[in-house]
Length: 291
Image (cartoon, rainbow, N blue to C red):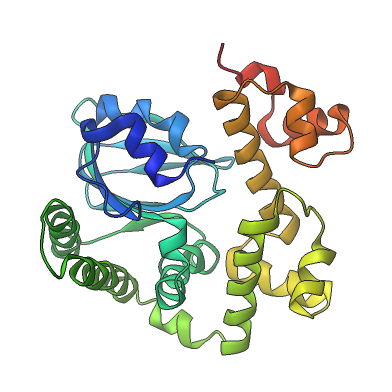
């Protein structure tokens, strides 16, 4: 997958301000930029919160079409299947992009769990609609983050970490996600967070639920129930989505053959990989390859 540093290296200041320690950046979009970013965001290993400030947009979230307009936010996390279909000519937006490694720091990931992944299952959407006042406040924090990223200050790291925490906590508060937070037991939350950290490190080599359940010292049934209740997806779906994203990235950014990619992703045969890819993407691996 692409990391945030790769994104910055490819698009630079055309889309982003300065990148902070490879961890966090703000991206500013118009209609043209939004459409050209589909290729990168399909394989982006970071968490993204995008606020629509003007115009309209439609995107595919898996097999579901969602429509967005001013003051709406859409969220992206590694492995999610979001693809922009269309934007209006006057479309503008701002995105806060946080590298997966920073997002997985202890408290930040717990906040992110509440702000992006919990809503997907509890509220059944990756779309958050804000009031004008809430959107204005959220945008102000995003712009402050953008401004501080570009500055050279003695306490820059501390300031940016604080602003990031403010952004996430405000988003949680706006949507009344605290109610969902207190409904989740500490043990359940810890198991899910541990599973997701394991998934990020092992999905290429380990395709079966048994590995993750054994690593967490719980049954496969218990792990399945926790992951489904918190993410809205099964363990297998989580693994498959990560593999599909990685496969697209390898096909588009490397000269590896389909057989080599199948082997790299730990599929038993090229035919098994081809069948998997067709199921996940609806086309053959070669059809998405960039020549």
